Image (tube, rainbow, N blue to C red; front, side, top):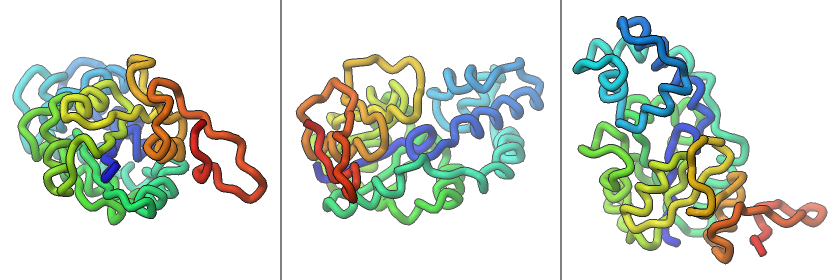
Length: 233
């Protein structure tokens, strides 16, 4: 593998509850139907902020509606953190000589603020946001743009995500889709993709990809040994 590209919400960052609540509050404040955060998550595959709001409000949305969304989201951004194990995984992938990228359905504004608040923005060579491509996931447009900017072939790249659309996006691009099992997103077909139960399983799947359809379960580390140093058997 030459590169690993990550989804953001629910993969790098424990942000799905925060973002979905901001959407639900925004939709309600704009006169839309009452929707739960879970319903928002089920529908936000339609794309970036304007498209998600338009989907639930049933009308075209623009800058005013987007600013209303940010009024709910921005105060909570400072509290966002990466999932446990993500910073160490990013270090390990970089140490293994692989490039790092992000393709997220979020807008550039949201992605930049959230990755910066979580303290990991500088780790990535390339970030592509949902408002920078025409077609949302599962179309491969955004992932292919990341790969062009990284200068790496699709077949030598893994795309790690917590949702079915992430894995379908990887397939459409010709890359390896890895399910981020720690994100616990419902509705992902089991057995169809390699699964990393924890962030440190990702590198083991790429270094020793011998059990593609099984959840990665690291061997017990010897005293003083980091679990990420053990390959999956």
